[in-house]
Image 1 (cartoon, rainbow, N blue to C red):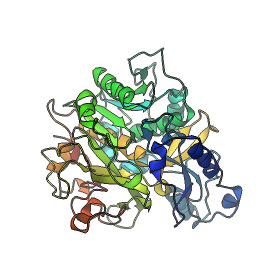
Image 2 (cartoon, rainbow, N blue to C red):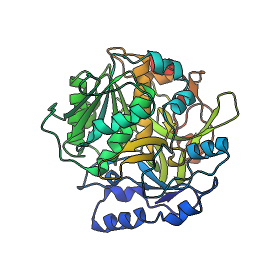
Image 3 (cartoon, rainbow, N blue to C red):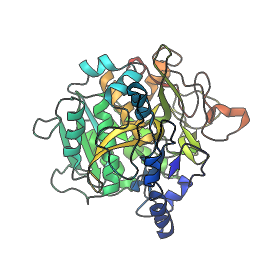
Length: 438
């Protein structure tokens, strides 16, 4: 379980190792959110959360999702709601809520200057969500989310939603998995929150190996998606440049990838020079002119948004920072802190209802959907470059506070927010669409 105070966090690197010992520990941690927290909840009750089950690999070498589910305390959304109603509000640990306890579409659209664009843009565009294994309830849960917020129906029958395997089959789907189903619900809901007029293609890989997830990315592109979100990652390897060419080299397609949830340190495929690496922030309402503030999401030395220097991937031509000789993570960012998390409806393998999620698994589909609102990329473009073209302009909210770990004092921007570019948040978060179009 993760907390917003100084409680030590379990190192996310363990998730890459697997094994029965860690699986047992994860179960113990997941049970720590007791009802006593709910009974004592006030506006100051710290938020607690646990990594979703898909953050533990099933097999050695598997990639893992980058998400957390809130188990107790008062989220930023609930705190704001309570302040307006002059009542206390709490999340019931280990149980679904009857109504949302995280930020919804209107909050996210407002925070990122997208309200008008979300209402008028996105029709005819397809956002692909790539995840592992099957979520049997994906379409039904998505319908609950969209109906609750007054978004138009997105179903198989009306042509808005489609679910396929990594080979494109609509009938021969992967084995169902409740952990990855949580991740899928998060991803689908975030795409809907930002670009409710867009079509959604869910491509389910047979497993969470790089080979199968990569094939799912290729299938998404082959089926016409120009915006592909990937909310997973793992340790870098010498094979990454081969994976780049095999799976992520798709000019004319905006491929977004979560930067990771383990604090300072590079992950793949966020390190690919062909993708947009998406970091994470803590998002809170404010009395400033924007109405919101953001800082680097960081819980501990082993939990927070990822950033850093790739060991293998070359620096893309549009990236000119000097602290990394190779690819630097990240390019842009969006909300990821579970304490300021987003509302998600989920029912497969859990009590059906509303949950609050965080992690850079939330920020990746948000940014993919922003690209969808901005329109189809140029046919030879790698859309991460658009963000660098808009660097330092009002098209991006510059995040200037917080850090995600320790790094060289000569290149402190790699782990510490600063004016302009920094590793944890890239050039900042969206303020409208201008930084996400050619």
